[in-house]
Image (tube, rainbow, N blue to C red; front, side, top):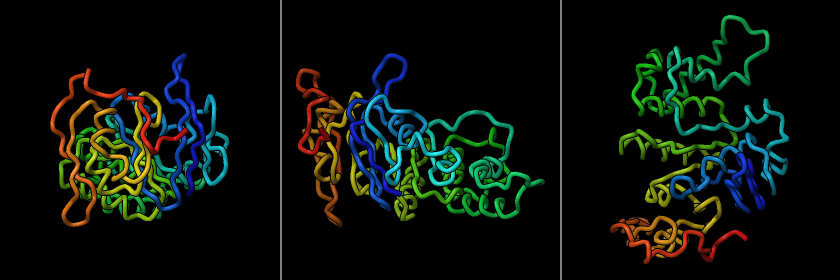
Length: 273
C-alpha cells in the first residue's frame, strides 16, 4: 500500500498538533518517525490510519483519502499497533490476537472460526510468543504484552503496518528480533521509534518531527547528523560509519546547554515545505 501525506495539519481541542506535514511511504518501504515526546508521532500514525480527520491537507492510502475509506476496509488492510497495550482485559493472549481478525469474521459465524484460530497461533509464533497463547493477558509482563500486540497486528496480514514504539518494554535481543522481522515482511511499514540506531539499521527512510512539524526527512545517513540531532533533541552526538555496512551509528555524548542548541523547528536540507 502506498501512503501519501500532503500538507497535513491536525487539531485536537483547540491545539494544532500537526502542522503542514508532508511525507510518503512507497509499497514495501519501512519509514521511521522520529522525534522527542510530544513531537506528534502518535497523532500522525492515527491520522494515517484514518482515525483523525485532517484540519488541512490530506492522507491518501493508494490515492484515496484515509478518513473517507470505509472503516471495515481500513481494518482489513491496515494494522495499527498502539503505544500502550496495558489495559487489563480478562482474555487469554490467543483471544487478544484473534481480536485483530474480527473484520474478517463471517457475520453469522458461531462458536469461533478454526481458520482464524490457526492464523492467530501462527502470528504468535511469528512474534516469538507461541508459548504465551493460553496465558491470561493480565498475567503478562510489559514485554510479553508488546509481543502479543505485534502478533495481533500481524494476524491481519495487513498491507500497511503502523507501529507506535514497537520495541517498548522489550529487551535488547527482542528489540532487534522484532524490528528485523517487521522490516523483512515486504509490506509498507510506518513506525514511531525512539532509538536512533534502530531507525538507522532498519528503516529505508526516516522523518524527524519536532513540535508537530517535519524538521528533516530522507535516508538515515542524511537526516541523523550531529547538527540535526542537536537541534531536535538538545544533545551532543557523534555519528560514525558502521564498519560492516557503512550505516550511521549514533553515539550520544550528553545534553547541550539550551543556549547552545539550535531551534528545534530549524529546517534541515530535506525538510518538507
